[in-house]
Image 1: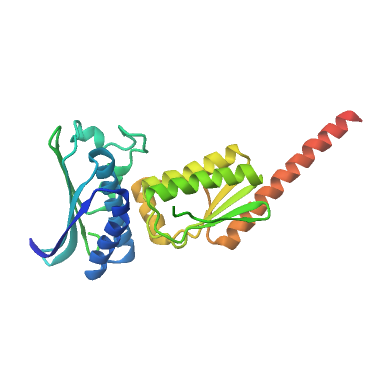
Image 2: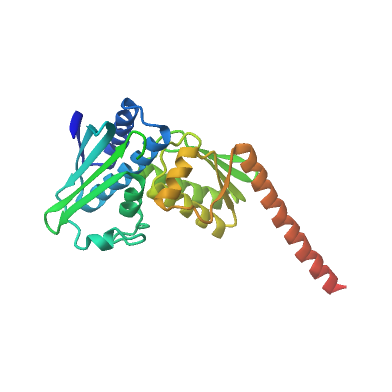
Length: 137
Length: 136
């Protein structure tokens, strides 16, 4: 896997979300991703960044353009140092939320992107990595 | 503080969202709309999202909340102008916007609201007629 472009953004306030979404759009446009795939990626990113703000009061996101087996895509890595997720299987279930939300964020984001990986230990924070390829597969 | 303008058009309220919504702005809009429904006695709310490129689960929940709250206040909500990419994404995300009426554009949304208002008026008339019959 080759990383072609890399950028890091700190997300600490709600106002950071719109510029972050625009940056994700810019990365998608740069590799010629279609509008539908861009929308899916940005929506997933929006869910994950909201989780980060809500449960961990912020964190950082690494944005990368990657190339692998002649495929180009955008990889986003969300890192926070929040409380972590005690039961990952439960958190990935539709409709489950410890906050007062719809509980669609994590499972919904997973459905919207091509690759999704979540690592978390209670007390050590959470890292979510998503990849969306240029052609959405 | 930044705000999204709410316009009154006859018995309806019209909102055109032209900016990318962040959470606080969406919550302010929800609050403003419900207050306006109460103050003006509006019978319908039309929300144009044709310029909105992202609707995530939070934004979807706000749209659903506006529709439920308006209904309790005797007003129908129609969301119009959703971009195709947004519709595809919403369904995959798992949000079906239940209870929210939708229309392709502002014109069709207005028609839908007028029809709903018309239906309700007819119902009211029929009820009155029934009472008249009983009085006879």
